[in-house]
Image 1 (cartoon, rainbow, N blue to C red):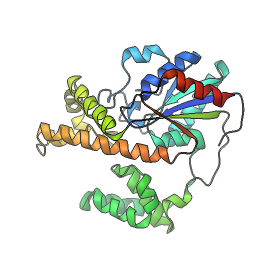
Image 2: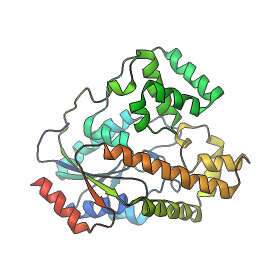
Image 3: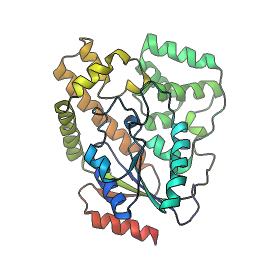
Image 4: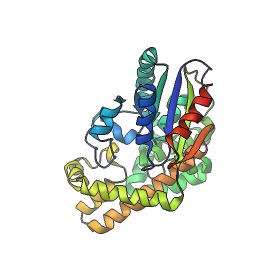
Length: 305
């Protein structure tokens, strides 16, 4: 929740590989301003290739914040990001009343725009039991449990992320109420007016761009990067598409060819979840990814009045 004022945060959202980085840079250059990165996978300095971190040329084209700023060994939550990003924005707004935020991590975008929700404390033994179920029965067991206890959140959560699924179940079981019932109750005042731009493409084109990006990542050394991270494969930050599949290849569970197909398939699924999340986000102005920059800027300037 924001109050109408003279500060504007232009937010570029959409699925992976759609062109958010390029558009964000053009907008930042237009306003001679900075970019807050809101891609939670790009926070980690060890995960450059598999998370499609902007190139040196892109990073040099506009000042970026929250890219490769922490290690996979650091504990960093969405609450930490909310605090740090809002502090940075307060500083940046003193220099320029227009700032840009770019990213596809819906939960993190929502934290900046609307604030985090308050959840009651629950018995720690519930989390312990869920972690045991995860280890013994696997993630699908917990996914099915969440689908039964909170079908609304099941449709929105990053369902392949064990940490997110476990957290939601912890609240469901500990309170006897759906996790989703605690969302969007508390309103947070922000010192900026958000203008949210969504990029989209038809499904075939989106899938084609995703498949091509995975091939480029492999050409750029993703296999070597994953090999270096393999000893830390149990780390939470590495429970993500692009690395999990290659770890299975190193474990001789997959062939390399199959691992690459799984990366593409799981990235496509990830993109579909991103679209579902952002399509439910209010007040997003959607544009085809090929829309002329001038047309998008006209819409932004109209919003600014």
